[in-house]
Length: 188
Ligand SMILES: [Zn+2]
Image (cartoon, rainbow, N blue to C red; front, side):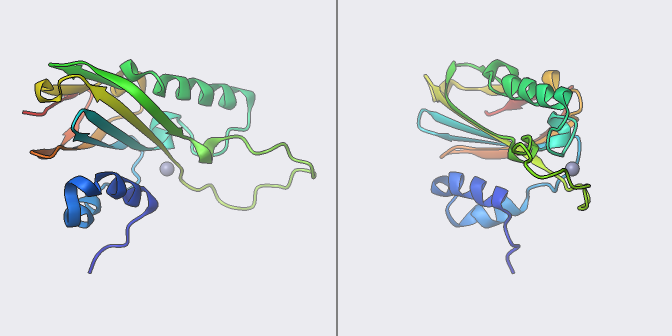
């Protein structure tokens, strides 16, 4: 029986479906659960387009998993988004150059609440976990010359200990666990 896919997995599946076809279900089932200090990364290459998706517990990137409420938290969240929107902070390409076309950063669960009109109610619900997802779309000049990628994320986010990476192109695929001392994925 197939595992029920979370929204996150559906998203990755939808993105990779043209490449993976029916193997998408088993592939998506490999994804790690929400573990602080960890992140999931998917690299999908199709012709000149390289699609990179990062999913991480908010704790791994921002250091908290609730709506930013204090001025310091709101400023920190803005800073995190700024860091995530600069590709040099995320990934480095070896063998060819790839230019960032599009970025989508989703920090919805951490965004401050709308200004409250009624008197503030005491927080009744227990804190829930939250995730940050980021998608990048790159255009690579000569994708066939791309030999490896290095993840610069570890330098930017000290709480990040491990990244489970999956990469796939029309001709090859692989996966691996990356750490601050093992930041490079060899694609050959
Ligand atoms: Zn959490």
